[in-house]
Length: 269
Image (cartoon, rainbow, N blue to C red; front, side, top):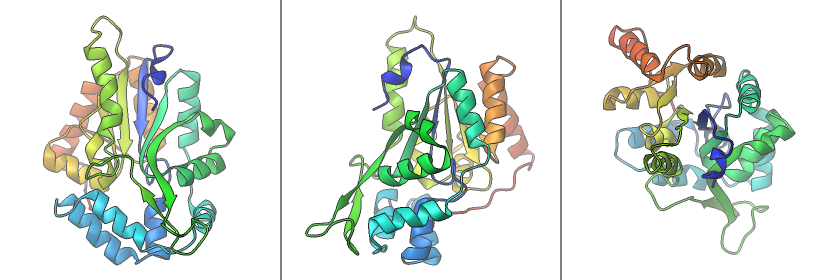
């Protein structure tokens, strides 16, 4: 786990982020399900069930992955050939490295896929990015190299499969127990139903424009700010880092925009 190693050097900020559809332009799990599994229509039905509380993310995600029979190495190759990085994430990552800001990926995806995509899309320095996520294992009597031979091993027993809040809360507790230590500002960026567990856990939530996380935050009254790509995340994070604005001001400005109809929200997978 990144905690407490991410606190070495007394960082001014810590940035937690989803991976699929947030760092990348496409969601790797959606891509596998839509093209190698039971297809987009059924996936979107299950996403809606999760967003509306009729099913858990864990159960719907398991169904999606169970529909994919392609050997796991072929799945990784397919994704490496097709997934693209947000064009501004590398700029953000290099700024974060240069300013001592830890970047921690909290994902409901699987570690071998995420690591392979980061190395291909970001480069060898991506080894510095901490990843907390699910794993992939052989099915009984088979291997990942065989058709229908792999399945997900969830990170925990929660209805999310990976309750991202559990990776963030130790940081808040650390500073609650040490009120005299300077507390870093904590950020989270996400886009979809796998990010619901993390939505209330940091000082500022970046929610991707037009995606399910925005819908959820509006329904639940959770403060957030909208991002289109990592260019806007970098600009906002730098301004807060340099003291040019505050978390409270950014969240208030977004709330005003939403209240006055400045954001059109649509439900996407």
